[in-house]
Length: 212
Image 1 (cartoon, rainbow, N blue to C red):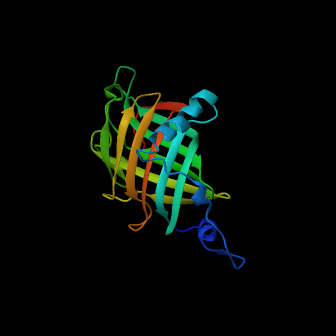
Image 2: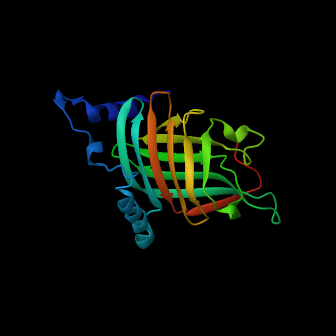
Image 3: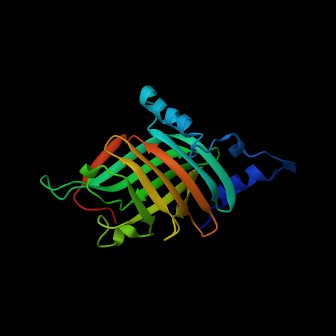
């Protein structure tokens, strides 16, 4: 369901407010996921390690709920969950959550049903599949459940990554640093978003079974 408050805030950024044209705050944002901006993106992420005030960097561009957006920011929170059936079993990737702020809303970019042995630490590309966590092979397939929770003034809007609309490609996966790029349709087939992230997990939990 579209949240009126969220849609109003986004709409006013690119349209009229009190009869006057208002420039979008997104114009001041940088899309870092290009080769030209890669050094600046690395510097933004590394500033978190030196300051200790953030947990990585995140950037995206495209449209959400029919409105164009561009975001380049640090992460205010980054958490990770692993699956390990018992102390003698291997650990598998399960869930990652990255929280940050755009000019008009807070977002939580969440990834579920990642799968793969944690010790492998190799690049992987996974296909977006809504509800991938419910599959029997959730930690042993090439599907991943991705979405964004958009938050404004206490109201939430969930933008689910649509099945077969894109991928996430992880270029680095270890317990202290996760890097990746993504593309997909979120919420509907018209709203496509491209992005990238560098995540330094601030909290890691280990569960005996995958998240549903």
